[in-house]
Each structure stands twice: as structure tokens, then as C-alpha cells.
Length: 148
Image (cartoon, one colour):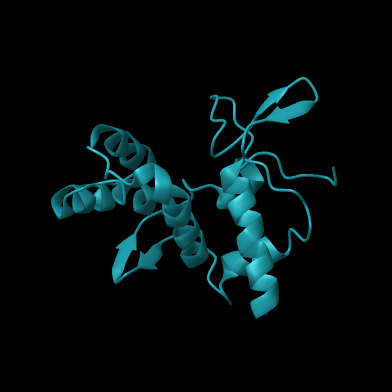
């Protein structure tokens, strides 16, 4: 595997949903992509707004785990994440330039807390997990190449 970026912390934290990089989607501004993603779980507008407005992505994630999820969440969560990533890495933005600069390096949301859906965990020399966040970031990177 070509020199992967395998953690979204430290110098590559900007790839993380927890990075303070405002996204504006459907006329609303969110402090982080995590705020957007977690708010989209909510059934009611009041819960959505409460999550959108909290101060930290950690708090947004916690609140997102407490709300009653919309019934179609499992079927739409990847599309919601992709929409947020497209907004975060908008064409011409500094973050888009940084994402393009990763060239063809694999992006792996390697994590120590066991997330095998959005990320992957190291087992020996292998990464185990779906790495959906990494794959969606690579998709957005490819879309940016086409639009650039």
C-alpha cells in the first residue's frame, strides 16, 4: 500500500470530522462536519438545532447518540456523510487543495477506539474495518480532480 495516511490526528487532523472547519449546508452553518452529521440523525428540528449549536464535536457526537434516530438513518448515513465532506472540501477551498495534495495516498481513518464502520483498527500488519470515512474522502478527492 502506497504510504497511507492512516490516522486523522496531529498533522492530518484536518481530515477528521472533529476538525473545526465550518460547513454550510442547506443554509445552515455547522462548526464541524461532526456537528452536521450528528444533527442529521435527529427527527425533530429542535433536536437538530440543539446538536448544530453545541460548542464541541465531542458534545455533538454524544448528543447524536442520545436522540431518537430518523427511521431511515442506516440507509442514508453514508450519503449524509458524503454531503458534509463535499461541503467541507468545497472546490477551490484551502481544504480542497490540501486533500488534492494527498495525491493517490490511501486515506484510512485508523483509530484506537474500535470504530470499524467509519474507520479501521490495526490487527498486526492489517487494517480491519470498512473505513467508510477514508473511502468517502478518497471519493471527494477524485471528484475534486475532475472539477479542477
